[in-house]
Image 1: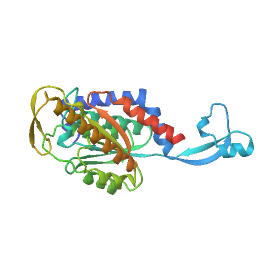
Image 2: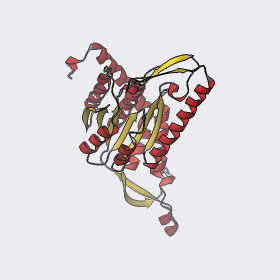
Image 3: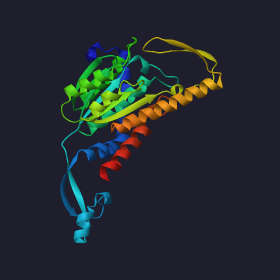
Image 4: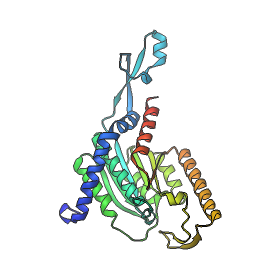
Length: 299
């Protein structure tokens, strides 16, 4: 799709998203991204004497004890990282009960991460998938490339077909096109268990972070009386009465157990975790994750 083929509505949406996410990256995210991931991508260079203003977390205690003079470890930064965004656009992500859909949240988060990567002089690529891989954009640098990534993210939101989710197809495609180790963000609602084996294979090759997107109704049902639930990917329907406290309690318990199983599976696979919701700001959870990574990187 060329710019001439973009509808005025889509072009306006791209510009709004570009301005919003670039602003957030510039004002909030950039330093935390650089510290979290550049720190992980550094290699040891030398040890030198401590100087006022140096980060005390980088003190080499072995050398300091041996010389009785504080020394710090100095690292040199790798020239660049590759950041791959793997975004779930299946039918289940077209759900939301508050300010937007789960897909809207995933798109905004992906755009923020793309801007952070490019402003950090890193390459960024994109894979969109549902029951198959829909779009693959190889990793590149530059502002023009982020425009291409954002355009692909927003263009796909117009689709309304009923599709399931094939995590293996997406992550196997990633492993095929990205031979060198990369930082990979998987943005998805992670429904079902089909992602477990695929993330194990991918986390063995890449630095994988799962960005889980959910809606408050998926965590706790409100009391709105009888309603019909429909599985967006299969079309199956089920009638429930949300005025029943037993129904709401069972729903809450099931959601909590599912969350615990998901988090444990991700921890076991050594996958980072960010949790986003359709009713909450997306910046704070991402910043908290980056700052947590920064602490680990420099410990």
